[in-house]
Length: 449
Ligand code: UGA
Image (cartoon, rainbow, N blue to C red; front, top):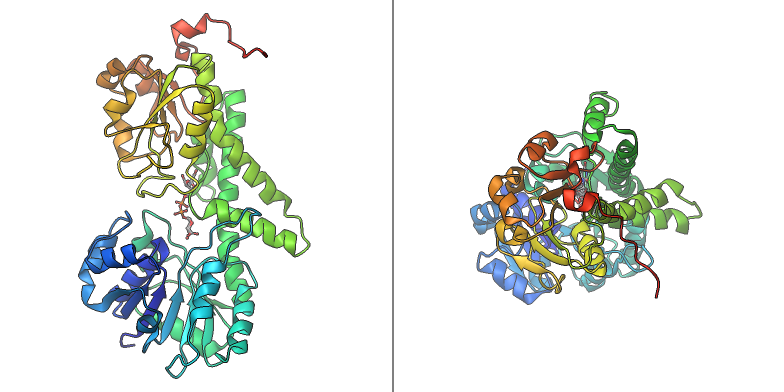
């Protein structure tokens, strides 16, 4: 198929990756966003987000990519209109579809082309496609097709995930519309799941909810491992070799974050509730995740006693490595809990900008600056640079040599041999881990007024 003319609504993580990858596949793409600073920056060739490989892809496909604020410019001649705006959680936990509806409401009635197709990339509740279909019909846009084509790209590997997908899911009301979206993917070799619109919508939500369930499950196993002397990393390795389980998403840690899992688990739970079903399992997945983010506090208290006046270095702030995204990052909850305990918090991240989100935290330019004089260092995000944290230089900079490895990326034996006390998540502790100065101390309990 020769290149199609495509418009993409939304220049966020999903929209930019979708636009750049579709251009890479040979299509001509106009990305439309309502934030003028973003559109201007992109037009100048600047990429407003950190996503590995994206800047190269945008630069390489400059001739086939443009950015605009204008609806008319975006849709003129477009054969396919991808909706990739964000659908953040509302206070109730339901997905906020206002940006999706704004795009649909703004579509002009005289939209041309034989049969332009609206392709939903944004993650939406099951049933949204049917509502959009009815709205389009009601507005005299019955000639506009509708296809659900959820995205399964993870931040940090989004370009590769798009160009080398595990599967392409296409839910269409009209088979011919689905055929056209399938053809767009041209040379990508992946199983294509052709299904109904509600099923395609559910594939997305169920996939994210299941991955989140695996994480909360392994985190609970980790918490039990701590009580019974097992090591969750060994347990996960043993479990993952069962082909029915597989090794993925079994890394215990301080909980999942990001713009997708917390939002989608909650959206699926609310969707079920709104439809008359109480999805018990997802309530537990959410609660386990909330508690997991806070468990580091207990680990620090075990070694340091009261945290008031103690200096703690948070290493890594983004919700995972390979991204600058701070949305729902566990670091935010952890930093706030530490501050509430009266600790002094320093933090370092190689790409995330967090000074506005964490005004009371001193953001440091290097790991060394963050750990200087610290009573403990916590690995919050498993950036590659942190794998070599346990050096004599770092130990000498710290006031107390305690490392809490919130992502289980360090080798406990090597860390202890380098003179640090080590605490992982779900890993056995060593009697030598309790720092001498705190070991003899009675635990300091807060007393009432
Ligand atoms: C996730 C999905 O992986 C994508 O398939 C999906 O397309 C995307 O959401 C979306 O809905 O747009 P993402 O949120 O970018 O992608 O990140 P993940 O790599 O899935 O990680 C999510 C969180 O889970 C991170 O905080 C990570 O640290 C945590 N995690 C992941 C664990 O705690 N343990 C694991 O074993 C794996």
